[in-house]
Image (tube, rainbow, N blue to C red; front, side, top):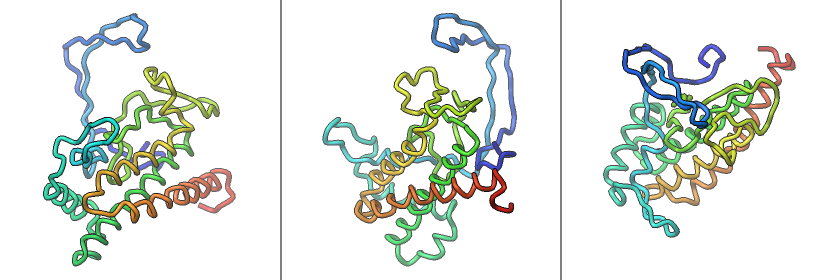
Length: 225
């Protein structure tokens, strides 16, 4: 992915042990044994959308909530740390106004996420498990699991054999990433008005379309690289 120009974590080491593990690759009961292997991946940060969901308030329908629900002080600490560490330019530009800082941060995350999924679509790559815990807060590809490339154009391609409903199918990836951005907005609602974040969410499609079309135009040499 790195050499395809896609923002991604990098593989640092690969360690194989003598411990045997059982694999059922296609969930058919045909179990094979393989040596256990660990890949150490590195990135500027492994903070993800899901990191902020531990503060989510109780859902009116499901009754579920984050384990640190209501702890706004910890949410604020996490936000400040994330922005200071990962988005120093935003921190420096808005250090006197935290509300505008958080909004600028959310805007940048939405933009980078839209551009990341557009880059995936341009190379025919399917992640496989795009839940909020697999979405990087800095817009890089993380958590390589049942991913796959499409061999020929197949919009409904599903690379995860456990995804029976095709929730994370190739052509669903942009909408799922946008949905995940909305889930991040819900997690940030204790410090930002949802109405302001909804305006930002509306920009997702534009960021996606602009990046996707520009990338595809370069592929067919309509734009000089």
